Structures are given as structure tokens and as C-alpha cells.
Image (cartoon, rainbow, N blue to C red; front, top):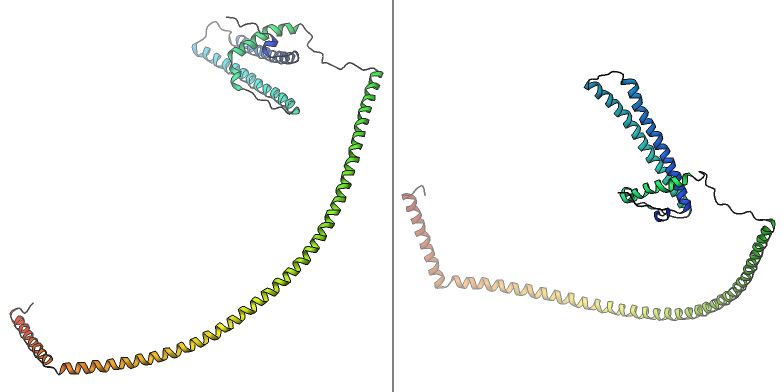
Length: 305
């Protein structure tokens, strides 16, 4: 099924771009034809140099084909690498031209394998490329028509008048700005003078307020000092009274402890003289003797224990 006819307008080319594309396609085709001729010469060389016998063995045929494969592979690989490098140089030119106009070009690599677009390019090559071959290869570049002397003078006069008018406008604006600057300078001088007067008045008021505050602080410090001295005197007297009371309390404590010790001794002496104390003491003596007798008996019957 043949692809539909594609015109330059449908493919997105204007006349200038069409010529550039055709020039590149012509360049690519010439390189392709040259490389195909080189591959054909490889086959012709094999025919002339090796195919001289009527019969060949399988190994000989395999050797000839392997050698031919190496040569053809090298030629194709070289052509593909050269094509890739050529495309890089072409992209470099396009990007450099775009950067001069502050443009950022972007490419969609997936579109390079779009079969529909590739078929449109092939159809474009068949139609417009053949038609363009009939035109002169050197496309005339658009040039400005020469101006006569009167036209140049008229343009110069218009430019001079425009520049003169712009110069007058700039001078007028400059005078306005100078007037505004002088007014602003006078206003600044007045403001600075008023600020100095205000600072002077505020300085005097602040000095008087500071003097009054200092006097008040001095009075406060004097009053606090007197209160502190009175507090020290009162604390000294209180401390002396406390020391005296503490000494008296210690003496009283010693006296009470001495009396308690005497009372305990007296109580113990009285308790020892009672009949209950003596009976208790006799009972304890008897119990001790019984315990001694029991230990002796136990040692007699159970010496190990």
C-alpha cells in the first residue's frame, strides 16, 4: 500500500526550510551512493580475485564469505558512524543558531522511529526532491533592493529628526529631574535643621530628667543604707540575747541531766533492797545451776553432740 502524497505545507516546511532539507538529503544520498559503490567494489574484487576455479570446497566458500563479511561490515559500520557524527554536527549548527535568538530547542527521540513519519519523509523525497532537482542547486538568497541616493538622504533625515526629538525630550526630562532634585535638597536641609533643634530640646529635657532621677536614686540609696544599719544593730542585739539564752539553757540542761542520773542511781539502789529483787536473784541463781547440771549430763550421754 503506497503512502499518501505529502506536500511541503503538510509536512511543516516553508520554502526556505524545504531547500535546507533537500540540500541535506542530497548530501546524505551522495554519501550513501558512494558507500554502496564501495560495497559493490568489494564484491567485484572478490569475484575477480577468488572466483577463478570451477569448483570450491565448503571450507573455501566459508572462508571467502567470512572475509567478505568482515569487509562489508567495516564499510557499513564506518558509514553508520559517519552518519551519526554528521547528524551531531547538523544539530550543533541548529542549536547554535537558536541560542543566538535565546531559543531552547527540544527533540523527541521516540519520533525518530515513527513509521508513519518515515514514510512521509520517503514520499517527500520522491516528489519534492525530484522536482527541486530541476531548479538551480544554488538557491538565490533574498537581498535588499538597493536604495537610490534620494532614498538614503530621506532615511537619514528622518532618523536625525527622530533622534533630535528624542534628545529634546531627554533634555526636558533632565531639567525636570534637576528641579525636583533641588526641591528635595532644600526640603532635606529644612528637615535636618528641624531635627537638630528637636534633638537639642530633647537633650536638655533628658538631662533635666536624668538629674532629677539621679537625685531621687541618691535619696533612695541613703534611706536604704540607714535601714540596713538599723537592721544590723537590731540583729546584733538579738544575736547577743540569743547567745545568753542558749548558755542559760545549756546550764539548765546539765543540771537536769545530773539530777536524773542521781535519781536513777537512787532508784536502782532502792530496787535492789526490795524482797522481790532478792527472790528473783535467788531464782536466777538456781536456774543457772540447773542448766549447768543439764549440760554436764548431756555431754556424758552424747559427747559428740
